[in-house]
Length: 112
Length: 113
Figure 1 (cartoon, rainbow over the protein chains, first blue to last red):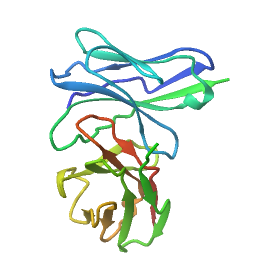
Figure 2: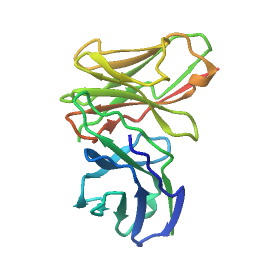
Figure 3: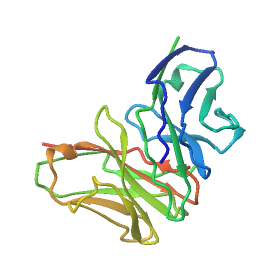
Figure 4: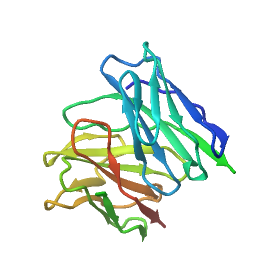
């Protein structure tokens, strides 16, 4: 599994765009990049997944450069309820289902 | 939207006792998981289950742990003889197909005294 590095914490204000970058220098050809969100005392929640270039859904955008050695999760116009821990995960899909290996994540604090 | 449910939400037990944590995955999902999170620490993978058998397990998942899917809906985690260090949040997750979009339950907080 490729190791990921992301900032331990970030602060932002309501209405701002937040970009969280994750480094994964040893990403393999078959690896996908996935981001999860976790609120206190809740289970992680899938946000977005991508392989290359840009992926966008109703919650976030994921930017992946051509070399795929990093990725950036972009949260547009954050609100107080976006305060959570955000995890970047990298791994290959396999036939037996895919265990998730969580790192420490980035603790995002959104202030009023 | 369908969701994974877990019971109980909080379980208190004495050291050495057996506990069973229960999960109802999303009905058309095929892959099932248990994770745990000790307070203030990372989410850790315990075990994955597919086609009625364990497909992967971590070093944490020793002989004291077992999983079962006794019927078409429940997925259980049993800890035979609990230790103080088993105190954690235990999350069940399920997955429909070969993606990383696992759906997590709300967790069971296990407190071993």
